[in-house]
Amino acid sequence: MSTDELISFAHELADEARKVILPYWRQPIEVESKLEHDRPISESPVTIADREAEERMRQLIENKYPHHGIYGEEFGAVRTEAEFVWVLDPIDGTKSFITGKPLFGTLIACLQQGVPIIGVIDQCVLNERWVGVVGRGTTLNGQPVTTSTTSTTTSSSSSSKLEDVMMYATTPHMFHEGEELSKFNEMCSAVKRPLYGADCYAYAILASGFGAELVVEADLGLYDYCALVPVVEGAGGIMTDWMGRKLTLENHELSKGRVVACANAELHKEAIAILGKSYTDERRSRGPISVIASVLKDHGIWCMAVGIGIGIALSKPRGSR
Image 1 (tube, one colour):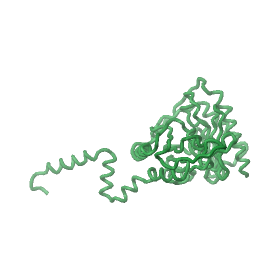
Image 2 (cartoon, helix red, strand yellow; image 1 turned 60 degrees about the horizontal axis):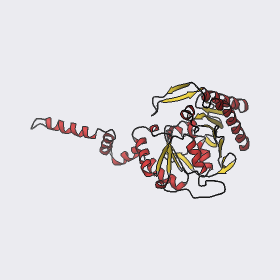
Image 3 (cartoon, one colour; image 1 turned 135 degrees about the horizontal axis):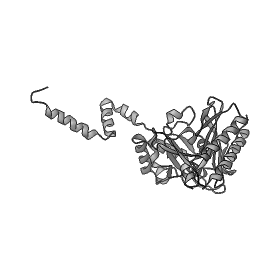
Image 4 (cartoon, helix red, strand yellow; image 1 turned 120 degrees about the horizontal axis):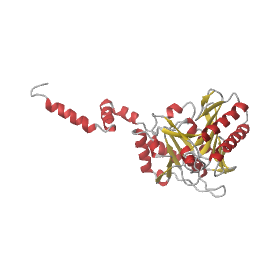
């Protein structure tokens, strides 16, 4: 099966999603809530537009490639062991969609042997479509883009130091209390300015060299990031999990939905130096006593533990052992 054939079909899927989504844009629409209590943001909205768009894309895949796998946000996964798997997020950024903000997008990825090889970010309201293809590059509405240029006719070097860049995340509330949030806060202190609220559009901005050169997020589903990888990397950027591992179907459980996208290798190296060092590894290297102390401190009960220990010692009768 040729790459050109798969790219053409990815366009068909995006076109079909547009037909479903646009009639609902800025119209009264019923919003339901999905609750996932193990996530930092437990409530996630879903609409008829999300469901209908995914249903239509899934039907196209079943009709044309019945042996391909499908992994969708709304209707789950089938045949994920297949050589080719389509990963679908019909509306990434449903909160933006239901509030009339045109920064949501339809995400379509084609994986081969679990590795993203084609990615589409489609913003139907603005009529913008990014297509990234591993080994070929990334285009915006058919024109090549890169992470280090602001147009196809001018060239400028992207920043290579964290202190000079603006960093996107959808929301600071997407990070779990503890290690995730601490590392994100450290990144906020290291960069020029943190920015919020763009969902998948932040990665499209990065891939196009429009000024933002770093995205750091967590708690993402496979459907939230698979399409973004070819778009970012096709444009000359790097996108991995926080440990620097490739974002693949196989690695999803290891990555835990933590991703970092950078405009260049230098930025990625700096970001991974902050995001990639595990608290667990640090504790292990310091030995068991330090581990206990570190755990107590991390949970805000160090002073309480010390106080209890002193109280017990002082309460013993004289001469006792």
